[in-house]
Length: 79
Image (cartoon, rainbow, N blue to C red; front, side):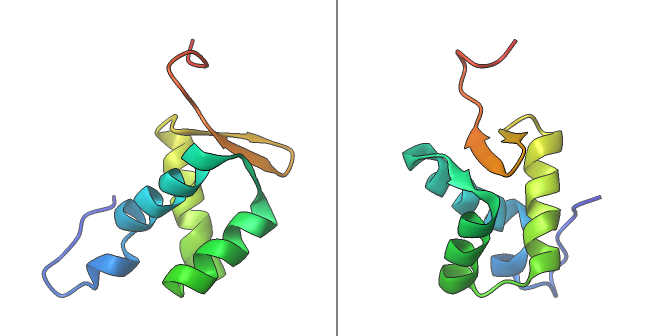
C-alpha cells in the first residue's frame, strides 16, 4: 500500500511523482525511456521509483501503455 509516513521524503513518494508524470503526459504522449529521462533529470528519482509510479498510475487507470508509448487516459478514452 502506498501510505506516506511522517519520516518519508514526500517528494519521492509515488503519489507525488505520479502527479509530475501526469503533468508531463497532459502535454504529449511520451516514449517510456524519454519520460524516465525527463523525470529523472527534473526530480532525481531512480528506475525502481519510476516503475513504481508507472505501475501505480496504470493500476489507477490514469495512463495507458502501448508497447513503449505512454499516454494519459482522458474521459473520452475511458470505457
